[in-house]
Length: 251
Image (tube, rainbow, N blue to C red):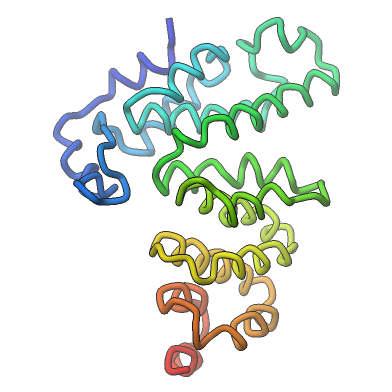
């Protein structure tokens, strides 16, 4: 039995569905058009994942990731984050990863998580699914690596809005470790993107980078300020003093 799926289903609340459908813009022509909800809030989904992630097999993870239900796909992604973060505790890993605690086994499980994630980006189709999974997975995987071209490829050539958002949001891990260059570089790639959800994501990451190095953020903004989207700028300077925010918005 797929314990993750069946436990989550037991928490379905139809009364919550209309509100979630509106919040995630599932109407005709909206960015989440056609998505289906069970009516489960994120804290409940997290509780379910925490209780049973280690018992979820690769087959059950696949079943959940391809579900029509938004919350089930979110649970699959949060489970993947748990597996990636605690590979030695994944009791349902299966024999394909071996049964020892060797560094090779740990690495193979982590690589499985990344490969699984990248092969299912077509199922990651709303901002919450991106934001709760991309940087704990891709960002963490790429943190010790110098070659982060994957994120640049996603930002520049992503097949969907969501793949492009993965490209920028994944850099949150780097920002938290004081590595800001990739955030600025990928922000530059997405500077003139047409969608508001990318403007918000880029602005958010720029703001976080600015918390670590305000001068670096100002150096990024100054030559671009006259052409960057207003929403992106507003998010980026949110932590500036009021007078300084006003000055930048007028520019």
